[in-house]
Amino acid sequence: MDKELFDKGMKIRREVLGDAYVDRALAKSGPFNDPLQELVTTYCWGWAWGREGLPRRDRSLINLAMISILNRSHELKAHIRGALNNGLTKEEIREVLLQVGIYAGIPATVDSFRIANEAFAEIEAEEAS
Image (cartoon, rainbow, N blue to C red; front, side, top):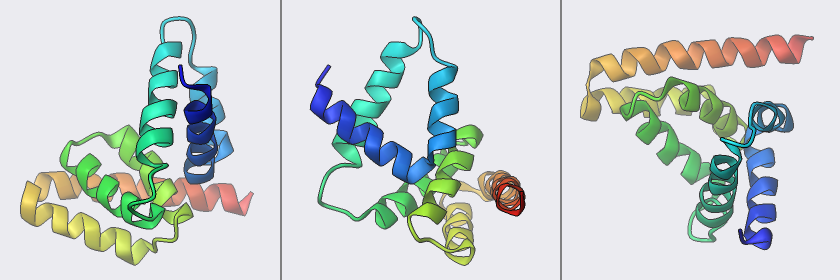
């Protein structure tokens, strides 16, 4: 494992998704999943997200569209939180999800809207407490 890239990835991962989310993911890990956590942190967050070519806001836009199209609800919920942390508004997230409907189909958009509303409700509940 590239320790420097892992540390960079962990920093970015925490900044985008929040400490609570990352701590929960790591707490659920164990001997079987630890290599997956290293892979995700090092290459997704350290290598890809850590590149200079795009700002995090743009990476969030791209991720929302791709993850919606792939129908990965758990990851979409996490990246909606990340998109808000990276400066996107609810309205901009809505526009991404509407565009998903044109290119990937209405069922993907309907599911993505449902997940987005769940994510917004969870975030608002956390902020209220």
